Length: 571
Ligand code: PEP
Ligand code: MG
Image 1 (cartoon, rainbow, N blue to C red):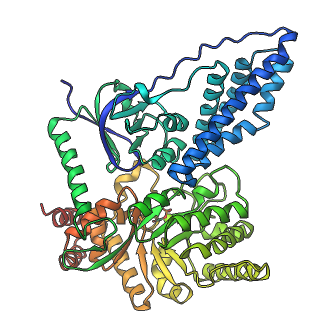
Image 2 (image 1 turned 90 degrees about the vertical axis):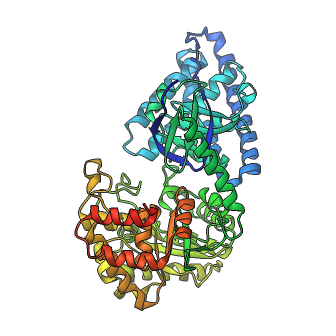
């Protein structure tokens, strides 16, 4: 018997699944490339057009089913495919090739898509590179339909199947969705990929970017752990039992009165903590609402804003933001305005760019900033809305932002467009300058969000995206503890609420430190939500306060971390 092995990947969709691997096999499209006689050209163009039409009908059907079963927010995935089918650069060029080079449709598709694939591969942007998958998916569909091959069907799959492949196209995942598929694990891809988004929409636990899966064969037993970001290959009986128990405990815990995800999150000694969710994509708001999250503490709007590789217009932004607010079902949503470097290479939020990003970018590009603000304000009639300004380093920045906000509100009044005039405005404390001067900012804002991700990188001078210095990026560093203590003591007398929304809040030990230092509002990514909720319910605030006092006297990050872990996990 094979030994249990842990394969690391990245969480694309939360939850755990136990099942048998089913490898997707990319059938080699043995299609022939050949020259046509002139009298065959017209018929070939017709054959291609009918494949386009057949694909369009299939996608439309898929889209309306998605809208019906998973909510309208995921149907945009199919829009991307439909757009490829309408794209003149694609469809018309294929027809042109058939007509001028006298080649068959398969060959023309291959030539045109190869050019486009090369262009995608040259892109310097992870998100846009991921869009290559849409083209790949549509090419596959067109070829299937040209050859009148039936699309894959789930009927032959075993029950409890975990789909494993180099890459599983989003439409395949959709077409195969059924009770039989319990999980997904891919060798490549990222949480930004459309397959990941589709998995979240279908609520299928998924891990992506796990290269070692290449060795896994169909029939192997797997556990997809969408909390830890791992796939367990050939799990031992104990591991399986542990996961099954966890699942059972989780179900029991959810049933126990006061322990449901939507019940208030209180510590053992009855201190109530506000726990919100961070989202990067609008469709995540559905899962957040399903988890019973009290509020969306951070919606990183730049991902959706630049998702199509071009700027959205105001009307579509209003529609998207309205949908987010309606889906949140009364939970306040914090729209963080675009945090992006001017070159847009850094808009994955892991920016090495110390120049024009966050609010600075918006103040230099007021047309974009105003468009986004107008859209948020117009959507605000659909639910409690908050606006959050990122990467602020001075009171002057804030004053400048307020002027723009006032202009936008005047414009909306002049246009007689409805909006909520009481939308709270908040600021991120994520630069050392903001950490030192948050008390001076207080009169200009309604709330604060503490962004520990950037704060730690700028405090410790450690680039958060650079693997070679990752060991130096440490939330338990005494400098960080002191900084957080100072922020708390500056903010508290102002009476303005503060939520910690950096990843420090998403890891139980560092989140416990935040609680001990006095922060009682946290916002975390959805994968971390259940474990942070469990941690809060299992600790006593009085003990955490003592812990904070003790660690503030320590000299080294390692000592701090050991002490914290011993307290949180009671080892
Ligand atoms: C942060 O810096 O802590 C934060 C939440 O913002 P982002 O991770 O988007 O930079
Ligand atoms: Mg940040």
